[in-house]
Image (cartoon, rainbow, N blue to C red; front, side, top):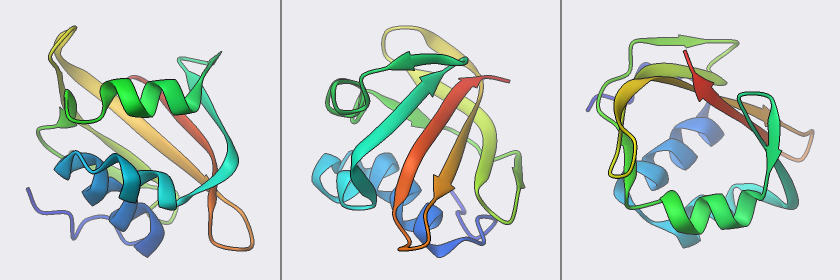
Length: 105
């Protein structure tokens, strides 16, 4: 999959770690107290990351918005099947992701 559509370097590198199933590298891009909203509902970010990574992935990138911080595309989950989703990354002034919003698009 071509990730060159993602113009924000932090998001691109985190996204590529997610796609590779590398949870240690994925977590490197986030603050220690990172938050997760799933369709607007708070979830445990660490639990989500360790349970989903390697079992869920984007199969295409359809749209990138918000200066490269919002990625929309087709998604595959071993548990939930295939659907269209988004990941919206919020980055602090130190370049770390402090909030990830995910959901069905």
